Length: 246
Image 1 (cartoon, rainbow, N blue to C red):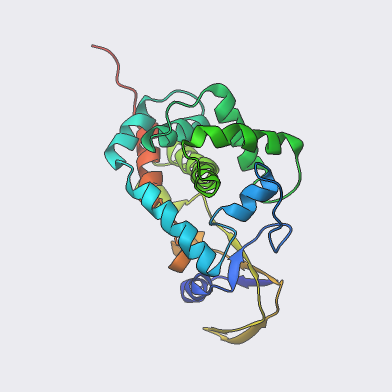
Image 2: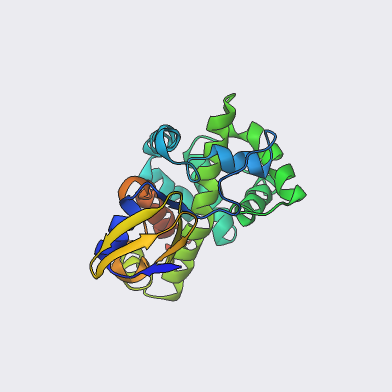
């Protein structure tokens, strides 16, 4: 295992297309449409090369349609725990309509099983969610689910850290970012130039990137998080003091 701690080394690693997010098992194995295996194989996150570029372009276009100020207001006015507020506010801002309790529970189940493993309940959750994504294109539906669940835990953690700390989202991102570590795995043999010299990383080797201390909690390079502004807006709305009636 290789652990990188300097900003320059981490930026180089995040810019290298041969280092991809960890998923067990890797390479991603697909399955019947509507299963967790199919979802993992269909979202942008776990692909690379031309397929990743095409799917990421769709994700970026989806997020660009979101009104950031409107999202902040939705987060401020949505009830529930932090995961629920994130999911309901973001779904509303994406034009997916109101999520009922069953849909929120399904998204949380998918999020809990996103990075590997087999769970019939998660497969059932994916099948339930697909018709709610308001598209007849299964790939687009999968990536809309991906947008929601990838925002779910990370943004909820940012909200909790902000609430428990300074109360200011930007200060929290500087001093106590919720994402401290990213994990990557090599999909080919690499030779990487680091600040301290050259290192060889064999195919299949895990790489740990300590992104929190160097201010890269949203990543860098071709996989930089395209939803930073939305995550900040969600967190700011969620930690706003409630407006009491006059």
